[in-house]
Image 1 (cartoon, one colour):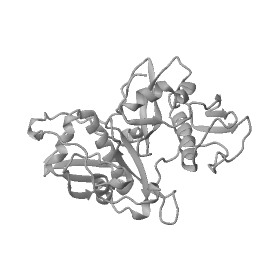
Image 2 (image 1 turned 45 degrees about the vertical axis):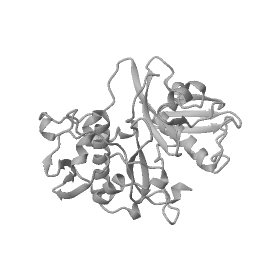
Image 3 (image 1 turned 120 degrees about the vertical axis):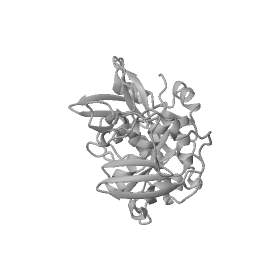
Image 4 (image 1 turned 90 degrees about the vertical axis):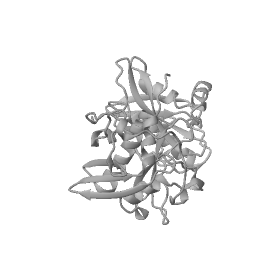
Length: 321
């Protein structure tokens, strides 16, 4: 199974015409979240499966006046409407179209009761992905901190194929690759590209195999193609150097890095992924990027902060429901 392998190097992503840094106006770089504010909608993180089997989080807007919890579940089910919308960006729903359930809220906990065998998990991995999908998506809703899953009104503690659902379930890591000893708890999160739609998704790799930020970034530049992973970096991009001083990390890339400016929103996602990896691996407080020694300034004047890193999993191409 692909998730029993550890990431190694080699991949491609996109080729685009070079844009000179000299043509980018100097602007103030503003830390911000990437999802746009809309008074009529709320952004909820939904979870889908790509053609390689990896789980891809993306943001979808839910009308504020709707039953947000039920809408969140419905928008992740394998019905004809969702299948049609997701097909063009290479994703598939995780939850069965025949799943029957009801939801109620107690305090900050969403209680999801599943009826009979309608959960319909095809394998242990599929069962875990379904549970993760329900828990993480509902916990992305404002006011929901945990999820409790029952079956036919009973707290059964474990699903049919071994996935624990005991007690209140908190958000959990997705796309976890096991270490050699089967451990899935001590991991580092790296980020890769789905086949279509320029969607960035996380892969949690065993911490024991991860070195410093340089190792992690190079693993993202050159992923293992056999695992169905693609790099979020432009074709030919290389990490030329990494230096750390008083909590400030400086990353120097080859000239291909500026090709990201062709897709400014995607560029912002890559910057957020880089910042997240630097914080996790070396606890950096500030990230600086240069391209062959010259200061790099993004097209949208966006620069990720520690706060915006927390929103990373909801970053994906939005489309109207």
